[in-house]
Image 1 (spheres, rainbow, N blue to C red):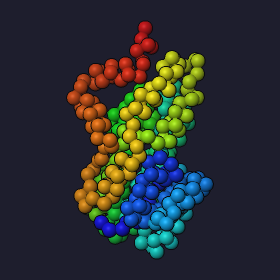
Image 2: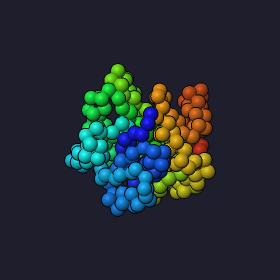
Image 3: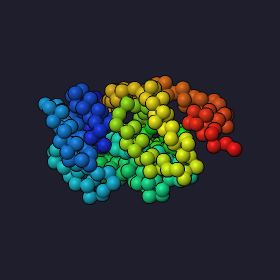
Image 4: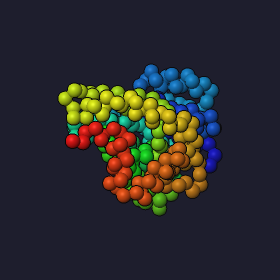
Length: 284
């Protein structure tokens, strides 16, 4: 593929920000979107002479999505985009037994319904051209689930299900749907996720002793993290490949985790994760 018009949601930080700059450096026309006007301005300044334009888009606001689509039409002279990278999202960490329903609702509103709403708005022009690509950023926890990641994992399982159905529905129309499933990536994402855990670190929680160790668990996870450039290269591959894979896992060693889930009995994996997360202290 030659130069592509690529729209990236959630481009003001983390994977989305790095991918936007990477794709622009590779010669594509990038429309980087996000909620924060200040963060978008900073990104635009960093892009310099690159073909990167910023547009405000809040995936949880229908009006914002349609206003962004109108601006994209103007920027592309009515052609629309070739590639949509649905990256906007965040991670909610909390015990499922104690998580607030409003927190879960907000998680699903952004990670699932926002992704779907944006996709539906930008799809028609791809369908009319008989060509296009949708890249949905999921997670390794979209195929597994870990303690305290239940709500986030549920949102990514939903993204996986929607993407699988959409891939089959759109293939006859010339549109590819691709999932990118990152494991631990070194970005601001982790800081925000750890912040969502703070309200649940309370003395009355049955998990208080476990959550008190959250920072140590994070340090262990950081040791296995890779830089966002790895994800950016995979997103580019998913965007330009003539026959993209249905799924890309990054980094590759995450395949080992998925293999363990496939090969080991569920109760054994439960025990391994309980030990790793310090849950055994709850046993009486």
